[in-house]
Length: 224
Image (cartoon, rainbow, N blue to C red; front, side, top):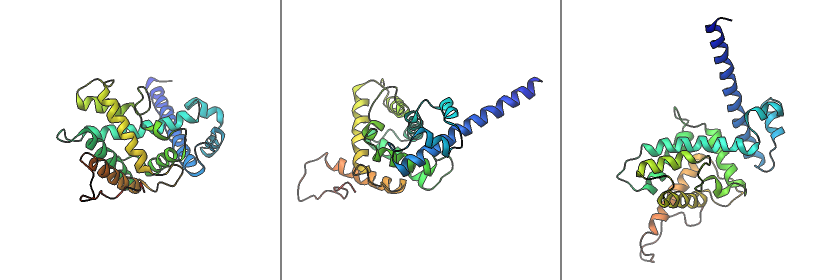
């Protein structure tokens, strides 16, 4: 086979692999959101993706790895948005703006945005699974959320293992958990979550000064 033809065949084969991988992630996000993370099996994902479990295993060792890929994709989009935030705002506000940018872009199906179904699937999975919960957002070196950790550290000009990065990351995890609401309930779409993130962040910043009846807190106290 001539070199050009061989390269072309390799290119098509790689493209097919990328498409199959993307399909697996799409299907897993949808099934886990519809049926619940714990109730979804590899066999179900493989069947819905029209592949065999053996083929599935060539791309992912288990279901957790598929969801890890979904979390990493979200993290990459958030990290990109974080790098676009001005340095004149606090790191907490930069995280808020970055997440709002990603969620609202998905809601609007904007060019280059992460897929609406993937984002919504991710939100439902995280809020519906006690095995994930805060683990999808908390600071863990080497985790799928590493892109955000690296972006934060780069923005601050410090090592990613610095305590400030850990504090920021874990604080944000608590804010996200509060914005998602009661575990196991329907979180709504990406836009609804973005609205609640804004409410939760407003409540968070309200806590930076003394609490008093003369200055009532913003909405969002119920978490929903």
